[in-house]
Image 1 (cartoon, helix red, strand yellow):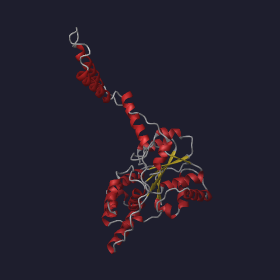
Image 2: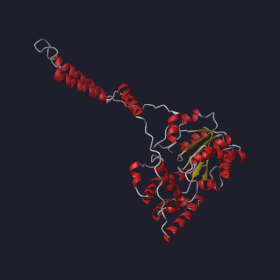
Image 3: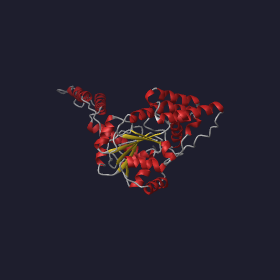
Image 4: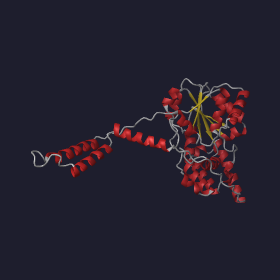
Length: 367
């Protein structure tokens, strides 16, 4: 099932933005599209981690001459639509059952990293039992997902595709996505693109619909309550599909307790920058503060000099000579005066950090 939010079927450019719910097979689908029709796989944001993945216009301008596909967890906004219109970017939106998403996120945070842009989670929160962690994910992450869906549902420029339809018929789903973007592709190209995505190890966790069947009834009911806040979506095919799934989950929970498989083993530890790199960054930041910002650290240093001078060096000119007491005050006073000027005229301006493609690629591996 796809939801056509476009008002006209005009051919689009060969710039494709896959705006996707996390854990919706977006990495795999983007790779399949790129391999099928030789699109460049790029990113249109300067950083990952906990940062919301809003588009960077500089990146859009830099890549305007390329045919590309970019995959980001980005919510809808008028500004995003305007950028995509200005740079001829077709918007494909990927969504997935919210119940299945909870389970997939649970696996992801154990196997890879708890760091993400849509809710706060850290290592210390992973020591909860399965049901408690799933409930926490539903409570904190699912509001972002509903916001994502409601925003893109209102868009006239995007087309929404469901993960469940992709799993049922990958060739058909990818073909429809490319057709919406105005990129011709035959069945052989699409099949080759899907095979290349598999062979290159593009991430797709379990690759099946219905993973939320083991959720606790209270978690399912909480998600249903969130969706009920929007009466206008209750007849959407996407919401109807989730209501049907919820009914099955609740019926199963009423009949028998579902045996819970063990949590996935923790994967590789999170990669941290080396000590040398962190040390370089520390001193580079301090240099920026000292050299460019008239930072209060300079003022503190001057005050320290004034105190040391007054305590130990105050009598450089013997007091018995003419003006001998002037040096006792003039040097400390000068230091205090300059420190006060620095403190009252401190101007903190943002320091631009250059984008480095290898940093983004490394960050992308954890999302």
